Amino acid sequence: MLSVLRVHLPSDIPIVGCELTPYVLLRRPDKILTTDDVPETAPIDGHFLRYKWFRIQSDKKVAVCSVHPSEQATLQCLGCVKAKIPVAKSYHCTPKCFSDAWQHHRVLHDRAASAVNDNGNEEEEVFGRFNSSGSGVINSSLSSSASSPSLTNGSAPLYPAAVTQRSGGETWFEVGRSKTYTPTADDIGHVLKFECVVVDAETKLPVGHVNTILTSRVIPAPSPSPRRLLQVEGMGHLDTDGRITSSGTFTVLSYNILSDTYATSELYSYCPSWALSWPYRRQNLLREIVGYRADIVCLQEVQSDHYDEFFAPELDKHGYHGLYKRKTNEVYSGNTNTIDGCATFFRRDRFSHVKKYEVEFNKAAQSLTDAMIPTTQKKTALNRLVKDNVALIVVLEAKFSNQGVDNPGKRQLLCVANTHVNVHQDLKDVKLWQVHTLLKGLEKIAASADIPMLVCGDFNSVPGSAPHALLAIGKVDPLHPDLAVDPLNILRPHSKLVHQLPLVSAYSSFARTVGLGFEQHKRRLDNTTNEPLFTNCTRDFIGTLDYIFYTADSLVVESLLELLDEESLRKDTALPSPEWSSDHVALLAEFRCCKTRSRR
Figure 1: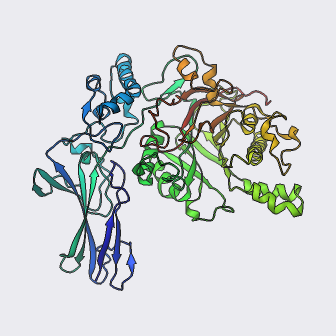
Figure 2 (figure 1 turned 120 degrees about the vertical axis):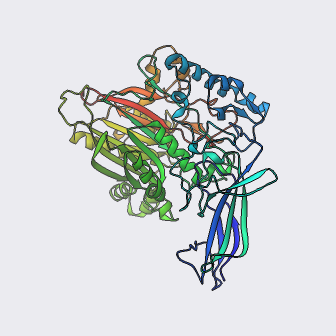
């Protein structure tokens, strides 16, 4: 007979909006062990599995800490209550927790006060875009209307009225009848119970032992503090929607989202395991990406299965069309479905797709070795050069008016390059060669059409490195120390390490901006290169690896997403964290097309 041998959850901390799918190990009548589901529609030997989820609601109201959401709150900031800041942000688990978070917490008060002065609306304008579902209410008096209507949790509806048991001050509400359950705002602060039992298909009666699991209390999805778009010409914030509404401007997001393959507890031991799990991170990343409302989204480290099964369909619901280029797999030997790559999305109402180019650096490496490397050294050369990296280049046509362009009736095209140069720090020659190869390809596109260009991605190169110099200055000093590493002589002559694209880093615009209030943002820039102090922040490394470059003869930076500082990430916290689900931070710039001048 069908029997359940084991039931457990990958994580016992349930989070609002993140699917909970228990691991259920079965023994079939033929003695085969399986984790496959056995639904009522396809019974085995006259038996199937029945699942139920319950919310255990205590008479005692529970609030959770806004900093450590797995901890119960013991104190509340009354200043938040007065300022009408969402109540979830007012709770702390200990006085030390409140004290440590104060530097960050007081910003919420300042922004709430500023919102009142500017607009008379204290809440949604500042926090609404990034708030997680139900984060404004913590106790058991949550109304059912706070639940997302899309979370049906199985074929049956939600069951707020189906009281199955009440004893010892506890009430059990049946909330789901499928194997997977997605906690809602109503569940915050409460324990969930999962039941699994074998049922006779004919009598519909349970057979044998009922297997149960209790979770810890459901916590709200931690939400990062909102990052504002700042105009780079003079001080002044954008409209309450968080973006300029001018039809001639567009926004571009670049973000390495950290592939699930790399998001291991060994690498990120400081991040709670539940916050590293993909079911949690994918929802948190989606919420953040959608919240930025960018017209063009360039993502790196997107697993191919996650693109197909999650990002493409989810972002499609928000009006985006996606294009994807998976890394090649000459080096990778694992499951090809989990190879990551670059994904570029654009709003269908703002752009249309004209052309797509795929750059495979492995093919370029093969061509290079065939042309330059003696036969006896080809294998060694390929072992050094082949890294599976790719770039995705997309040509788009704008559907909005071409403000600032010579001929208003002319088609406004835009070329967007998205890449991840994932090369070990010791292979400086390979990293520079890949960046140079990409730029020469973009030069060919520029030669065939007068077209503004954006070059986005994670280049794994810090400001001042040879790849950064090539991108930002158009050449590399022959005496640059990075050029000392070149065992294959692929960088010689050094005079060839040039390009003619007038590229400028978008975030260097902060350094050129004057006005009250910009000094704090300038302090987040490197004094030498005017790049952000960091876009990647782990326990082992903090520095800038990600950039948005643009052709300065055809595009103008209008505004930039404010930079994070280390205080924003809170004391002794590195990335990823419960609030930020990647070890990188997102970059976002708003551009306007301008009069085209000659290339340098």
